[in-house]
Length: 407
Image 1 (spheres, rainbow, N blue to C red):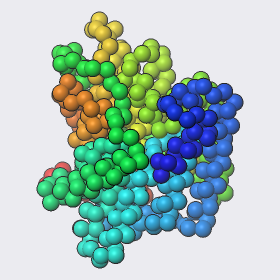
Image 2 (tube, rainbow, N blue to C red):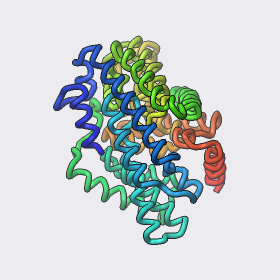
Image 3 (tube, rainbow, N blue to C red):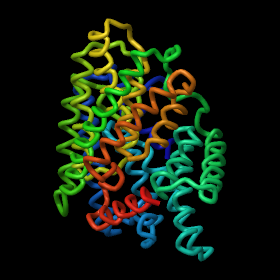
Image 4 (cartoon, one colour):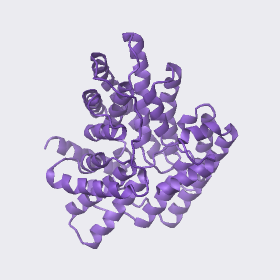
């Protein structure tokens, strides 16, 4: 799947090596618009064909695990994953992780049905497969296991943790055959957290919780108003073309947001740029999701948190008369991710493994992620994952969360 993504990126934006954002910036404005228009056309035709010939949605891994019912269509998952990688490779503002995550879950579902596992063990196997797929694609084995436990299963215990960690570790090790084994985000060296950064984390956490609440509501709206019937073949092209026009001035909004997050961690831009990107990136993601396109929300959400943290960090510098610290953007990323996923432990582990910064940033991350998640849970019981399920599954997942929080 990652091979499809890379080949599509290289073909669409005519480059061989280097960051995706740099390649996009080097292309002409006209090419960006044309590529995004073609992206929407391919997405629309692909979605319409799958709906026409395969029907339904094929099941969501989270839905199957949370309800302990239903099944995953392996063929639809495979085709949907390939279409998702093509869509993201051509610049759609969605994450690349949906395909390997869902494919890992689908393989696990096939194995569970073949061995006639009971419902609880089947749910554990599917969750472990999903976490392994995510851990492998981002080279984050511990975060992948936590993703399976905290988001899919809603609890962390030894009988569940062992298979989830084993699956994620094996999948990540195997992925090194084809994927690079190096840090995802390069962050300047961090010193011991200052009192200023700790206070910033305490203040920004609730702000990110409010921001994530608004973001999740937009995700709910986008999912509930996706096009149907003939509009499914047309609307993706219209919305992708609009995104191409936006990318003429802000090329960093294209793609899953990895380069946008890296841009935020450097702190090299000014307030106006970070403010614009803080507003545009979530709208681009929601608009892409509204068109019916399939893809992940993990990296787009992380990038929104990182650029929001960079914006608030620069405001904090002006107030406190301090210097730039990458911790501002890191705290923003963890806080936004933790609140939007309703999984602060997973969010913290993701940020630590993706950046390989532990000692100097652990306490600020804890403060930011925990406080933002508390605010988000108080405002809205959806996460970016439950928000994309039918209403009855949203209620079921909410009831499950309430039970687990009181167990």
